[in-house]
Length: 301
Image 1 (cartoon, rainbow, N blue to C red):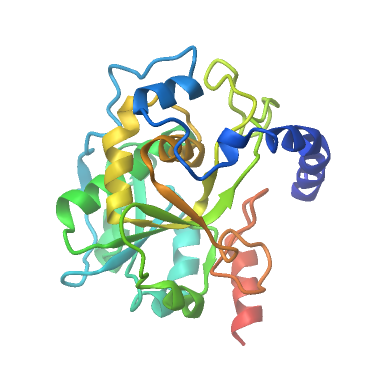
Image 2: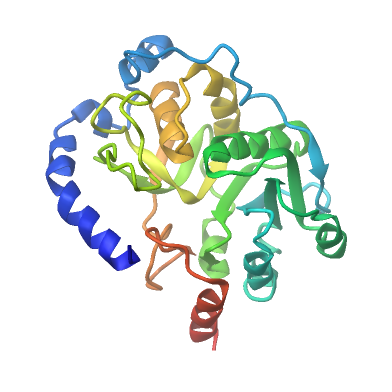
């Protein structure tokens, strides 16, 4: 289905459900859903318990490491698939050089497909973990990034995350960093009043057996955000205390609603127009590298 058709269909179909979700005051609030963690998790998952075999908080083996400057204060981690070299090269040849002085750019992949050793040796900007790279392993990839920062990069204060089908505005990002915030926080496009999508043909579909509530709590869109070191530690510590949901941003939102991780909305993230954007991203389809390159050329000339 064409991306514009999908967008129009979702807007029409989900409007009644979104209106209903906007009546769920507990889910809309930025305050903890419940004061006790286990009670809060049980409220979200009345029919599920955390997986006793959960390994999301365990650091996967690292296959390839990037070369980073000494004691960086922040890094921009870009999630990418092993075979998406065309997207990585688009970024390397366009906006990466502008962002590197603010937050060194690191591409994060898991395993699958061919070897990335030659590419890693050439660019020294790849972090690869030893697990299968798949849509259902996005939460594992995020936890691996947080584990890498917490275990190996003690100087990092802010973790910037993006996808490889994005354009990052270095000027706007520089105005946000370093932030004056302290404690546990996540800055990005915070979504409120979102219903669980019940159409199985959508990539964002979550079955009722996985999450039985109609509406999600507030969550920060996963395509781009900034997370404090303390926030990453909170997420990594509590991820295995929460039943698994394969949508990483929804799962992080659920955890955030229970552990006092402050989600801060900023209009510049996950934007599909170039008006006051921090990160350009089109939600309903994956633009081709050439399309993104053409967009970049149109705004940089």
